[in-house]
Length: 128
Image (cartoon, rainbow, N blue to C red; front, side):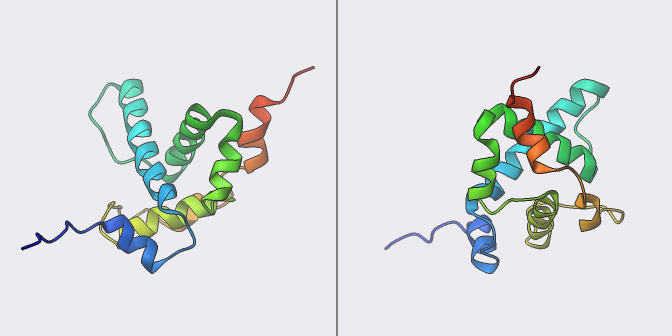
């Protein structure tokens, strides 16, 4: 007899909304952990809820750290082209019970976060 496979919430999420690649959700989860660790070091406390703006900055830093000059290309391949896409991914994960939110969190927290060209290409352009 074959044992049932454990449920994969990310696979269910991608099946429900195919705008974003599975790796985009895994990246966001990892970037959230990265951001929580970074903020914990800054304030010297245990992990806490982070704001949309804090998460956007953590996502930017983590993408640059992990993918360097290819960050914009990788994000684009996953369907992420603007800050609002990160918000959509977060709230998809919230709606599927993978992440939690507070009453003050909203998709609007991710609107107009940063220009992707500036955030992901400019750090690698020659200066002078």
